[in-house]
Structures are given as structure tokens and as C-alpha cells.
Image (tube, rainbow, N blue to C red; front, side):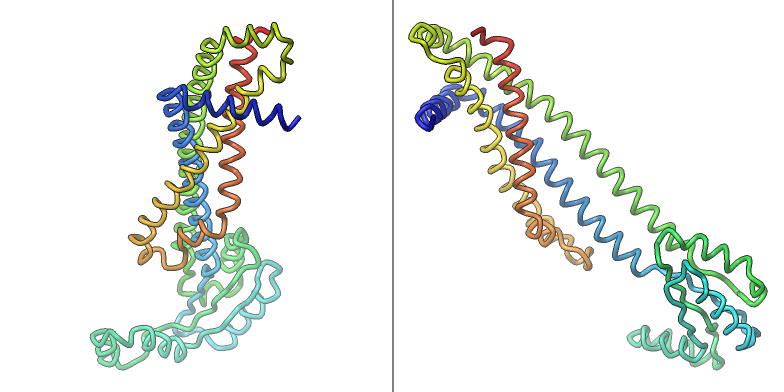
Length: 302
């Protein structure tokens, strides 16, 4: 058995190099398919990480009017804490809000000076509400707007956060659609090119196949070199594609690392490199073998 596999694999390797430009074309298109698939995975994974970070920072800020009484503020806080959709409610007094504002703008002397000129504290007391689940914020906002304390509320700050999350979700969806479209396109082209390469190989070895039949070679022995040839395309394409993906991510990451402070493309690649290689290998071999089997069934009459 091992002898048969060894001989047929050696024959497949010989066919691969003998086909020259056809093999190069088949591998190149396979590389493009796997390259796009891997990049799409890394970019989508990074984008999902950014979305998660944003969602974790999302909250509903409820700002009270300056004449709202402490009792009314506390009553609303207690009501929200009893809401099953609410994870936590933190009260920020006007004094605490002013302290936070000064600390966050310590390096902006113009803002601090302007604040001092105003004299009185212009900031409002607020409640910072965190939900148990990101999908519950809309119902929490509705509960706040419909509560008995709505006349004490100056504004509820959530619309912009929701807008950012919706926009990120839309971007991630578009990336997936575009990437999958390209992967499908190049996969079809890969199958066609590998199919034609195997077909030409079969025609080239027509006389050899006839001789093998005459000497009693089994159908498996005759077919295996062409199957292994398809597998070779997938393996070589995977190795080259992985190198290209790494180089691309390495170069891009250095340019956008200052923008994506919470996520790192290179880190995502390193943490998922075995999965990426595994998927590329599986997809590459499947495309190669499927193309080979189609050509074998159609043109190898044994």
C-alpha cells in the first residue's frame, strides 16, 4: 500500500513540474482564493473585536435637569435597578461630573480657563446605565422615556452609540459579503483551471495509461497520480498564501496600529494561525481534489 502511494505521489510530482505554466496558473488562482479567504477572516475577526470593545463601552447616560431633586433622582435609580434588563446603575453628581471633566481635560488649559470664567458648575447630574445584553438598550431607553420621572430628565444619551454599533455591524456584513463573493469567484476559476490541467495531463499520459491497463494496473493505481496532483496544488497554494497573508498583515498593521489601538491585526493572525492554515489546507485540497475527480470521471475511461 505504501509502495503504491509512494510511486503514485512521485508520478504526481513529476506531472506537476512537467505541466509547467499550467501548474503555475492553477496554483496562482488557488493562492488568490485562499489569500482572500484568510484576509477576510482576519479582518472580520478584528472588526468583530472592535465591535465588542465598543459594545462593552456602550451605556445609557440619563442627564437630569438642574432643578431635579435628589429624591427624584434616587427614585429613578432604584426603579432602573429593579429592571431585569439592567446590569448596573451608577449615579454621577454634578460635583463628580465636574471633577471628571477637569481630569479628562487637564491638558486643555483653554477649556479649564473657560470653565473657571463661567464660575458656576454647568454640568448636570446623571445616571450611567449598563444593560445585561446589548440588544436590551432600546427597551431600557423606552422604559426611561415612559417613566414617571421623564419630566426630571434633560436628555438621554444613547442614539449616537447605537448609530456607531449599527454602522460597524453594517461594515462587517459588507466585508463578509464582498470577501465571500471573491472567494467563490476565484474558487470557480481555480476548479476550471485545475480541471483543464488534469485533463491535459490525462491526454499527455494516454499511451502510458494504455500500457498500465495492459499490464494489469488497478484503477486506483491509475487514478491516484491525478488525485495527488490536485492535492499538491492545494498544499503548495496554502504554503505560499500563508506567507503572503503574513507579509500583507505585517505591512498593513504597522500603518494602522495607531488607529486600531484596541485591536491588532498581527495579534489576531498569530492567535489564529493554525486555524487559518488548517482552513486554507482543507479548502485548497478540496478544490484540487474535486477538480481532479471531475476531470478523471470525464476523461479517464477505465
